[in-house]
Length: 488
Image (cartoon, rainbow, N blue to C red; front, side, top):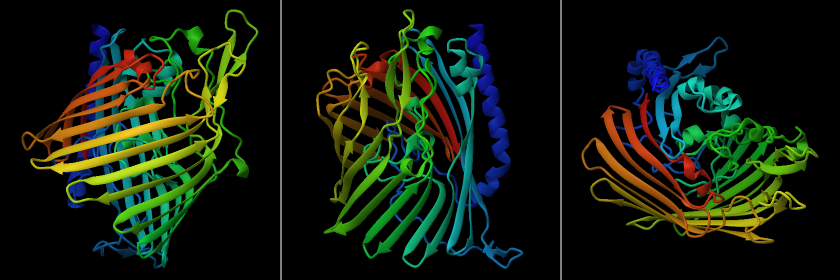
């Protein structure tokens, strides 16, 4: 009990210090138009895989029309510069895993700062970063030492890029988010982004997504648009260390040190031109339908675990996470049909490896081509009520998934219902369920708009299904949590 109280005290102190750091900037930030969240909005402005908030549009122009700035000035070289704008957020999350074994599983405080400005109407820039400190991993003895070191203090670069516009062309160079999906709340056509999966896919997208260092060119003509992407040095998913709650292998909780020792750090591809990522995407309007298609050649952002025999009886195997070379082709469409919005995505993936369940099988990994499809219907109903219904399917070619270590194929559905019962209270529930073997996730939550740009959320994350399912492997990680977020 004393240790838990110590964790709570550390988290409270962190929240206070973060708030003090931000308060001097609030007046200036509010004069720039408020925060990322308007009062009464859910905690996430972009929505995570499992978050109900609507994502901000990211498939349009890289450079939105710039409003005249009264703060424009000239530098020493005579180049006009606009006023520098600063925004960001402070976010704190406290989570307690109630499934056995019970333990505090998150006590994180985050501070993100983002600056934007321009050198002229055609040259703009964005810089940003985030710092996370987790008091649970700094003080708890529940996790292995490598896990605690990996998750207690982290610094992240955000989007840091330069935009240049020339006629019908827009160019972006630097660390950036490249989002090709249309459907809110689930990753399907979002094939370019790397992800921080150390808390599974529970946080909001602006916390999960990791920018790629890329060169990007877009051409616009009427209702049509084509986009070219080159990523010379790809960024990969941050899966954490073996023994973490959401390490992508079903390990016991807590994880013994000798078990964790069998899993090595991911082996990244050599930094060569042939290992860079390239992609193209085109979209247009056809009879009111926004239709897009894309092709992407890359190293998979998520690793596949390859087994190696050690010849040692006590620890006969070692596992090396490696990134398969794959290609993906797909398409998206969306249309506002009046009373509701229809969105759909489909992605074909070739070259992806999957670990097998049988540790004594001759091949530790098998390749399966996959086809992922999702169709979503979104309603904005009276009384500030939102209803989203999605149906999805994954089919594997070249063999079934019976031999695979983690089952993710088959048909499923998700539903999100959110409604404001008062101007400041918004209960919501999201349920994602596989109808076959992957299991499900149920997420009830209550959002309280405590003040301007400040939302406090109380929720539960309930994992269900068999232990070899995509969700079910985390059946003993179900948790309750509270989150407070201030945007400025």
